[in-house]
Image 1 (tube, each protein chain N blue to C red):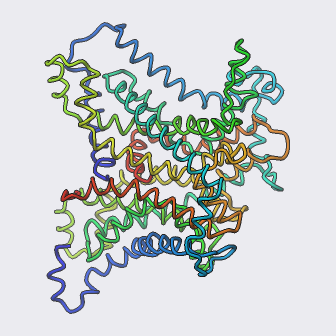
Image 2 (cartoon, rainbow over the protein chains, first blue to last red; image 1 turned 180 degrees about the horizontal axis):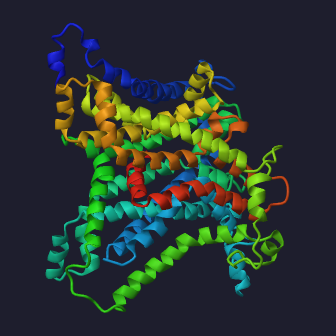
Image 3 (cartoon, chains in turn cyan, brown; image 1 turned 90 degrees about the vertical axis):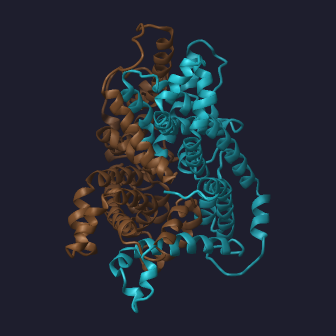
Amino acid sequence: MTGQTRGSVRPNQWLRNLNAKIASIPMILTAVVIFVGGTAWTVVYSFTNSKLLPRLAFVGLDQYERLWAAPRWLISIQNLAVYGFFSLVFSLVIGFVLAALMDQKIRFENTFRTIMLYPFALSFIVTGLVWQWLLNPQYGIQSIVRSLGWTSFAFDPLYNSDIVIYGILIAALWQGTGLVMCLMLAGLRGIDEDIWKAARVDGIPMWKTYMLIIIPMMRGVFITTLVIIASGIVKVYDLVVAQTSGGPGIASEVPAKYVYDYMFLAQNLGQGFAASTMMLVTVAIIIVPWAYLEFGGGRKRG
Amino acid sequence: MDDIASNGMVTAYDAASDRLKAGPRGAKPRRRLSRRNIIVYGTLIVVSLYYLLPLYVMIVTSLKGMPEIRVGNIFAPPLEITFEPWVKAWAEACTGLNCDGLSRGFWNSVRITVPSVIISIAVASVNGYALANWRFKGADLFFTILIVGAFIPYQVMIYPIVIVLREMGVYGTLTGLVIVHTIFGMPILTLLFRNYFAGLPEELFKAARVDGAGFWTIYFRIMLPMSLPIFVVAMILQVTGIWNDFLFGVVFTRPEYYPMTVQLNNIVNSVQGVKEYNVNMAATILTGLVPLTVYFVSGRLFVRGIAAGAVKG
C-alpha cells in the first residue's frame, strides 16, 4: 500500500488499478458478505426466537439459557472436550515420535510416509464407516480376540455410551496422525545438523537432546500444528455422522451436529444459531491468543 | 502461519529429501542389526501395519460373500473371491426409493467437483495475482478477513449462505454448491497463489509493464505459463477436498444431486433391510478411490498440497 500516497493526488482514484479491483470482487464479496456479514447475521439472530424461519423477534439470552440447559448440548460439549484433549495429546505425541523415527536416516522413508499419510486422503465418511466395521462387536476386533480364546474380552466402543467417544478418537487418529507426522518431520528437517553434532560432542543422550533442545526449537511448528488440529477438532462432524450417527442414544453427539440438526431437521433456527455462535466463541478462544503470539507484539509477518 | 505451513515446510522438506537422495553421508556405517535399528524399523513396521489394516479389511470384506462374513473373521482372506458386492454397490444399492447404486452419487460428485475445481482455482489465482502484483488500497484488509475467516466454523455461515443462494434462485442446485465450494476454497487457494506469485522475480512483471502489458495480458501471458506447479498443487488440494466434502453436499443440494459421500453414508447407515457388509465395504472403497488415486499418483505434490491445505483445518 505504498503507492497510495501518490494516488491520492490524482483526481480519479477509484479508476486507478481498476482491473485488479474488478478481479478482486469475488474475494471482497466473500470476505465482506459471507465471512463478516454471515457471521454477524448468525450472531444477531441467535438472540431471536426464530423457529422455522428467521424472524427478528429478540428474546435476549433465552436461546443460550435453553442451550446450556439442554442435556444433549452438555453431552456434546463434554464429548468435544474429551475428544479434543486426547486428540491433541495423542496427535502431537504420536506425530512427533513417528517423525523422530522417520528422521533417523532410515531406508524406505517414502514407503513409510506413503503408508502413514494415505488415510488423510480419505474422507471422514469413509474413515468412519471403515472403523464402524472394524469395531463391530459381532464381527470385528472384539470377536477376533474372543475367538483366540479370551472369551470375556470386551471392546465395543461404538455400542457402549461410556466409551463411544474413544471409538471415534481411534478413527480420527488413524486418519490424521500422518499429517501431523509430516508437519513435524518438516520441522525436524529444518533444524541445523550442527546442533545434533554439538549435542553428540557434548555427550548429551538422544532423548535429552530431543526434549531440551529440539522440541523448544520447534516451537513454531508445534504451535502451527496445534492450531491446525484444534480448529479441526471444533469442526468434527462427518466422522461422528458416519461412525455412530451420534449414538448410542445421544452419547456421541458433538456441537457441529447439534447445530445441523437444529437448523435443518428440528426447524429450531434460534437454537442452531446460538449453538453455532458458541462454536465461534470456542474457535476464537483458540485462535485469538495464537494470532496475538504469532502476529502481534510488534513482529511483522512476511 | 503461511510461512511455516506452506513455504517453509515445503522447502525444508524438499531440501531434506534431496539430501537423502544424494546418498549416505556423515556418521560411520553401523551394523545392520543394531539394537537401535531393530527398535526403529520394528516400530515403523508395526505402525504401518496399523495404518494398512483398515484398507486390508475393507478390500478383503468387499470380496467375500455374506455367508462367509457371518462365519469367518474379518481379517481372513476370502475363501471364494466374488465381485458381486462391487457390482451391487455400484449399480443396485438402495438409498430411499432409488436403487441405482452409488453410480448416481459418483456422477453427481464428478459434476460437482469438475466445475468447482476449475472455478475456484480460476477465481483464487486471479485474486492471488491481484494481491501480489496489483495491490490497491484496502486489498490487505480484505485478504486478512479472508484468512481469519478460514477459521470460522462453517456452521456459523451456513444459514446466511442458504438465504443468499435462495435469493439468487440456486439453492439446492449444482450451481449453488459450486458457488459454496468456490467461497470456502478461496482463503487457502488465494493464500497459496499470492505467496507463489509474490515469489516470482519482480523484474519480469516490471519488464512486461514497461512493454505496455496490462493486468490480464500479464496474467495470461506471463504468470500462467510460469505457475504450472502451483496450479497442480491447487488442483490436488481441491479435488480431494471437494470430493471428500459431506457437510456442504448435505446442506446445499437436493437428494437427487447428493454427492458420493452423502449417498455412501445413506446406503451404509440406512436402518432398513439386512446389513450387507460386503456391499458396504465395496461402496466405501469406491468412494475413497478417487482421492486415493490422486494421492498415489501425485506423491510428493500431495504432501505439498496438504501442507498448504492444512491451514484449512
